[in-house]
Length: 196
Length: 162
Image 1 (cartoon, each protein chain N blue to C red):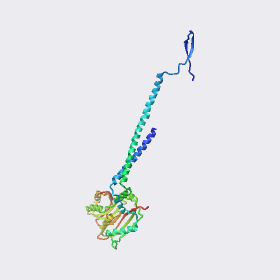
Image 2 (cartoon, rainbow over the protein chains, first blue to last red):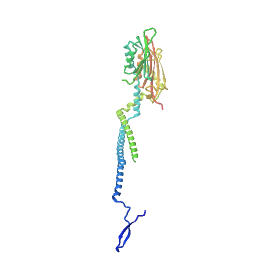
Image 3 (cartoon, rainbow over the protein chains, first blue to last red):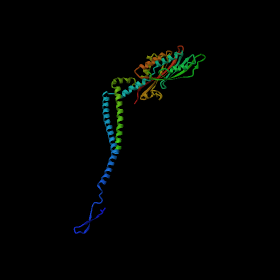
């Protein structure tokens, strides 16, 4: 864009006034106004950049350094633990095999123990065992009990529930056997294999 | 740039969590087994033999019965059978444990008026080198000295066939 020329009046040495053209840089703004705006914008930019870029970035860098440091430490610790593991020559497949055997043994029925507990309870009622059944798949024992009285089966059931390895106990309605004053009922007992 | 850094931190955190879990698991294994005599563990292979041999199992079953005083005669009517293709029901508490092994069911039947033979046989099963788990047991109490039928079955375990 062509600069606008300003007309300036000046008196010459012969007293004749004349007009000359002087370029006084009319488009140049005052220094204070120019710097102030730029500085404010720059300052605002710096502040905004500090708040929205530098601070989050700085925080993220610190987090990254922290995670990275922890990662290095953990890798080192893992390598040391692997060396310790290798040093003891631990065979996990054999250990797992041994554990399987131990776990299976938990399901061996303590036959003398359970029979003894049941016998102890029914002896309190002068009752007799008629038959005994055990089913591992259902984790239950069924015993048929014969008793001379009709009314004590519920009490016996409560007693059986108090036995440590019995998880549940129920009984069938007592049935009279023939013409005798004897009643039979079958008790179904849930078995807890993990009771000491 | 910030997003990229966040992604790297997330990856590192995930990796650190995995590493920590692996370290804890490995340390636990070391702690639990550092003093285990490894040679002793190999003795356990007697309890669960490598290979199933039906002839051997029949022989062992008869030997165990004889050891418990359940002899083969006209009074006891002793019989035994082996089911090498048994499938353990899912409801059974040992179904998951037994899934890694070949399981064979041995069924035994005999008659007796002496119920102590049941306990004797179960004790023999527990004391023998091989692992046997009682599966079912059924009997009635004898009335006035009569012989009663006694049925029981148990599982034997073998290394799974390839």
